[in-house]
Image: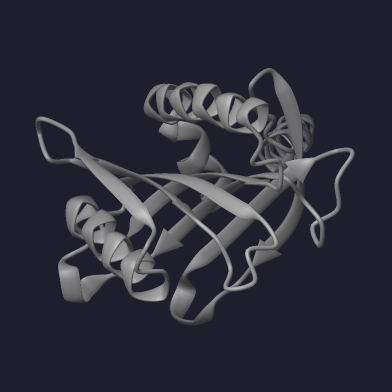
Amino acid sequence: MRRLLALAAVLLSLLQFAGAQEIAVSIDGEPFSKKFIGRPPIGDKLVEFVRESESFDKWTKLVGFRYQQLSRIENDPTKAAAILAQIVKASNPKAQSRVIVSKEKSEAMIDFLTWPPDRAYMEFNVFRYAKSTDGKAVVSLQLAYRFTDVSAEGLERFTQLRASWINQAAAFDMNIVHATLAQ
C-alpha cells in the first residue's frame, strides 16, 4: 500500500512538472521564448513572447496571449475585435483595420497597421479572438511586427509578412493559447 501511495505521489509530481513546462511558440519557423507574464486586475492574464535575439524592451516581433473577462460584451469574440478596431481608429485616425468573423461567429480576427505620433516605427498587429474554454472570458492570440524600413523593399516584405501572418493566426492551434493561460 505504501509503495502504491509513493508511486502515485511520484506520478503526480511528474504530471505537475510536465504541465509546467514551457510551451514552444513559433511564427515563420522562428522560436519565441516567454519573456513577460502579466497579471492584470480581476483575474485577466497576459503572456508575451519575443524572439530569443530580442529583448522585451526592444522587440521587432512579438506573440501575445490574453485572457480578458469582457462581461459587458458577453465575452463575444466578434464584439472584442470590433471594439479593438474602434480603439485603433480613435488612437490613430489614419490607421486602417480589417475585421474577419468566422462563419459560426465563434471567432474573429482583426489586423491593422498603426504608428506612434513621432512615426518612429510602424506596427502591424493581427489578433485572433475566441471565447475561453470556461466561457468567462475572451482569449486572444496577438502577432505584432514593428519595422522602420518603409522603402519599396521594406513595404514589399511587410506585404508578404502580412498575408503570411494572417494565415498563420487563422491556423494557429488555440489550444496552445488556452493551455498557456491556464498555467
